[in-house]
Length: 194
Length: 202
Image 1: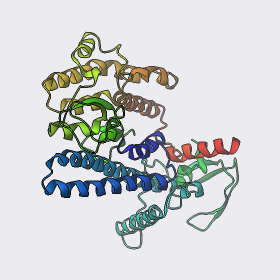
Image 2: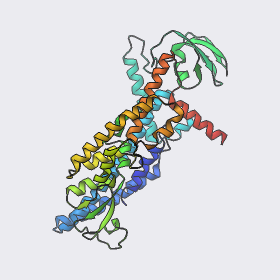
Image 3: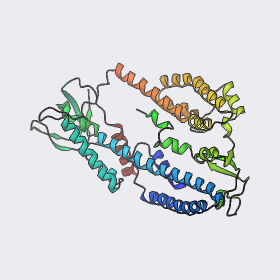
């Protein structure tokens, strides 16, 4: 049956709802090969249909339908992956963990880099003077300047904005400026205790 | 927040819409099609003969139906006797078994301008209307543990509505306990960590 491989790609994404599965290069290539075969057959039949053998027109229609379907599967596969990569930028920060990086292909890595760059450029452009506005911060309205946090991983030294150095050891408690630990909390290094 | 909008068909990139259109529909070819005998696996002719019955994926149907190449049988769960079941009591029906994407596929079928189209559409709307109240009730008055059991007979669209209801109830609870200003680990990061942990321990 036509377009089986394409749907398999999509199902792969559907099953992996909250993470990014490895880029299925093999699957994509197989779909492209099927499309090329369909296209070549169609071209042959279309030219004989032009020559007057009109019974071929229906075959051309059916194959064209399969081509469209394959195209939709491929586009949706790539697009939905990019959407997930974009989402990762907001949650993991500008550097992806190594095992997620291993799952993205080269053009996707380039996309991530460019997305990073334009996001940074935009955040720089909306601040006043030398300040820039970090959009990934204060996702929830801040109630106080300092928050009490508990460190849940062995992180090491962390330099705060005013130059102090805090050693973040596992299970240690700290009172830190909210601005500086928001990303660390989102990344699961610190835990907010109230 | 679960993304409701993604289930709808004008979205070219919708994963759900692509998956749900893969359902097989039994069709009958009204013209013969040269060279595509492979579509009919029971015959090993090179050409597809007029009148052969083939199970085609749904995504082929709209185009071929519009060009009068095929006639097809509407999936049985949208037929009149099943519509009567829904009319009698839709709340007890296991819609997930009737097709995980019951409403969306029904919408596609109804849009093919059949003589039943209007009735199908009416029945879909009425079904959702009848069931919605019950779904909302459940989502507001159930603990997290009961979820799997409760959503067993809901179709995918209803499951999303259920999830939205549950989430809003949970946010309300959080607000009441004054926990809403607490900064949390991003959900994506948390699940990534769990998976990594599972890999290490296995």
